[in-house]
Image 1: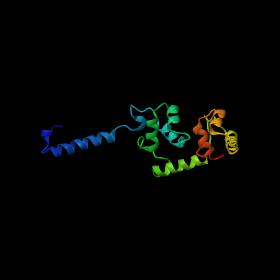
Image 2: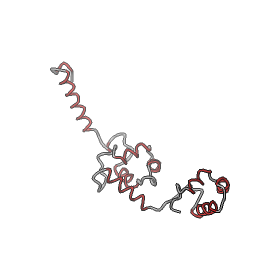
Image 3: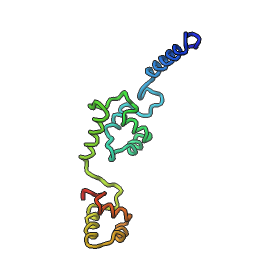
Length: 158
């Protein structure tokens, strides 16, 4: 395609854009792409497993051997756009349902130094006059953690 084949620069640019669009629409999508790491089945699994704040992008990225950015793009619908979000008509419905799922699950604190009994004891001992600094030292946590427990910023359910 030579610019001198066209009557004007505008015609040339329009023809070039049309060719580019055609190439992009014919490009291989999903697992047919030579650069694909995941299969379409894995993408559906990722979208089904994802629960914000509980089963997030970091955990999924490790599990599937891809980057967190890749997982985020899958979840948000920016990549693998040809795969629908199941029964949901749009991304907002999908995210709302996942947020609701999160609320139904029990709270788990995997790396917590405190448990429910310790939190109750901290609050009781503080009410009896114990100093925050001494409680932090005794339970092996930061002073800020004790403040957050006492202010119900963390461990709200206890």
